[in-house]
Length: 141
Image 1: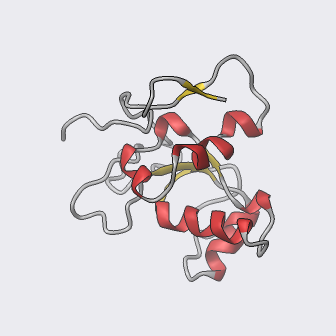
Image 2: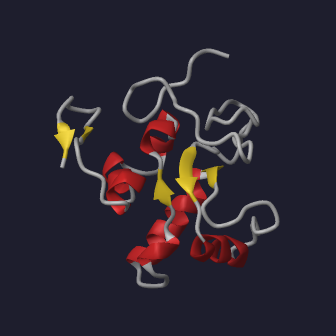
Image 3: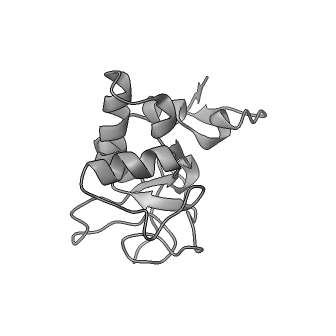
């Protein structure tokens, strides 16, 4: 498998090996022709998202618990984002994104700004740098 690239145009980082995640169960949000769900978005799930996903027909609560990192289908994450923006669910139900572990293909359904808004670093209040905007080479603030 050729080296995968993340949304920052850098080598894709590992999302989780405990539990082992990814379409290929290699710990990374790699994708390929057989990955119809596009498991490309690295996230840290929480109880609110797990309940939301179950309500939409994909109950992950039997294999995941709050705090787990998982390669989500980008369309499910976007579904949660859209539901939040439409006032149907709270912001906490949109999982935090692990940007360096999110595959570049996720940008086919969401924007880098969407990912930045829900970056795990931003949610945890971490400081010390901006995420570069891959389209311009400049930082996103």
